[in-house]
Amino acid sequence: MTSLLLALWPLFALIIAGYILRLREFPNEAFWPGAERINYFVLFPALLFSSLATAPLDNPALPRLAAAVLLALGLAWVVLLIMKRLRGWSAARFGAFAQGTLRFNTYLGLAAVGSLFGQDGLAMAALMLALMVPTVNVMSVWALTAERGVSARGLLLPIAKNPLIVACVTGALINLSGLGLPGGTDRLLGLLAAASLPLGLLCVGAALKPKELGGEIPALGWNSALRLLAVPLLAFAVAHLLQLPAMETTIIVLFFALPTAPTAYVLTRQLGGDSHLMAGIITLQTLLAAASLPLVLTLLER
Image 1: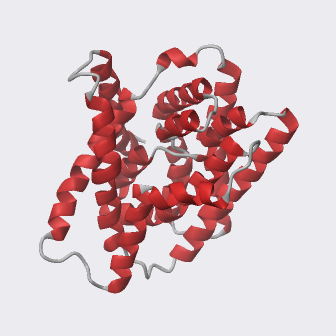
Image 2: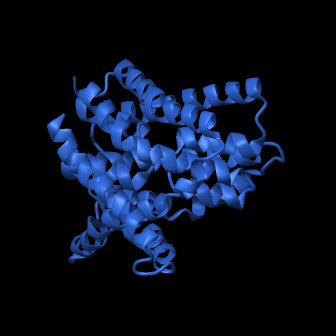
Image 3: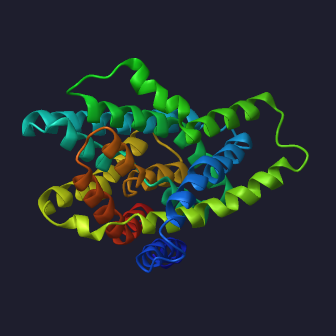
């Protein structure tokens, strides 16, 4: 428990620092959207690209890890569809609930994996992201547009343009080609990647909206419990069923125990979802994760 807290508390300290800095308008309001964009389009893709370009793709656990990721996401998706039918949610609300259950804060996840397992863990997590990011994006877009229909182009185009997915694919291709990262390229990407996670966590804190927590307390509560407690339990059951090794089991449970992604708010607003509900889900889950994430990992360790 002590080692987990030592690994995780600096991450949440950065999130709180980001919130305080934005609250005090430092350096100014225009800084945060720019910081988020440079991280999303440059720094974070550099981290994913370099991790996948050097990842051990011959790991015998990879097929089982991929199967575990897709099976856990599929089971969670089926549960959400059943709940939608029983509760009669509109696409606007279903899209928010689905993203609150399926999406994950990538910055926090990779920072936690790096603290716990170092470069080996980051490489494994990057391989997981190559599967999870496109799958969850398709589910999120469909959930928000189910009532009015969406074409295959409408589902696949955002994936093809997503810089994180592009970085994962190109990094894997470089790895398979055997070219490596010659001529100091690895050092350049390492410098870019080193700036990504601290800046990303600050931006997560800056995006918190405590004022959005009012009015939807029951919905926010059950969705947070589903994401932060039930979904990681599901991921553990799947990992145990497929007999994943210890590190891979911890990483998949950790990613399914993360709070939802702040970028879910942008997608919800763009596609006409309930952005007020989405902002509340993001904020509450991020705050609660400071307690739930160490708890889940401690129980897993035992």
